[in-house]
Length: 112
Image (cartoon, rainbow, N blue to C red):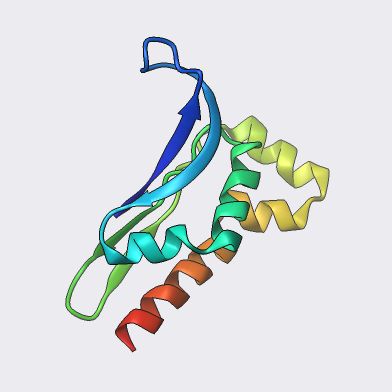
């Protein structure tokens, strides 16, 4: 299961466009995550700072699930965030802690 950006105004239906939404693509859990407005709001807020927000949820074993977030490759932008003093944005967007905790909570509620 992974995230997919919803874009409007793509060129040739392939390139560019403004991100207007983010949705989870996958099974039953994806439907549940798409219905959580707090996760969607956090992800849209982060898209304003980053051009992509890619998260993946994959089973690693019968007892372990891996949740991976975006790979940030713009050191200048990361340094800019740290210098800005926006601790909430750093936690939310740079490392995705809050989103990952919410996703994990949905997984736990489905399993437990």
